[in-house]
Image 1 (cartoon, rainbow, N blue to C red):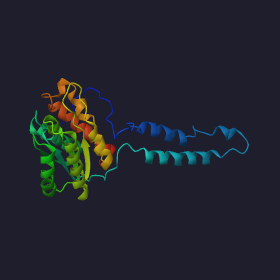
Image 2 (image 1 turned 30 degrees about the horizontal axis):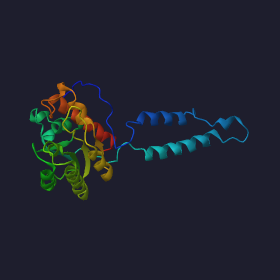
Image 3 (image 1 turned 90 degrees about the horizontal axis):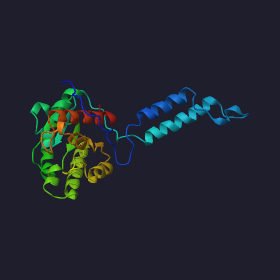
Length: 252
């Protein structure tokens, strides 16, 4: 399925407080070092360090910087026959579009992996926590995508409950050796943004997250079927944002 054109959104945020997409900056610095463009100002004076040694020192510093400033926690590479479990509520099920236009169906096509749609419309996070063990036992995934908590907000059940349940979902998967990524769900309102607890859970568990993807998509009427659900175009964008998240985290 050919990707649809879309408004250009801001680069997805990674974990809280980290600058997004520094790859180009790192590459430019690396090339400058290796090409000798970065030299000590003392190189023109007697006794100055050898240029090759300066390059080696700077390269080592760059490698340490790259290691310390990774955009996302790293995941295990997902094999071609690997299984992804897309877990959540109506945003995962694909309400507002046909089944083959849901984000799990689109994601499966664009990354050439099996993606199981385990979305249940209307489910709150407590229900998801109870349901998750059976889904993990049934499908034996290598990767879990968690998009949950929206119905908790719609029913005013409180952020702390959703945060605790999502945290437990992640721990449950990790205890079985399953990698996890997650998306933030925006709270209903005129200005769409995900509550802070999504980033807090991601930081506490070391889970790759795109906290802005759904909010970015739903801010445009052309991308949604109603006030809280994407349409086919919007789910295509969701799949593409998750694809980028998985690439950034090293899963694909």
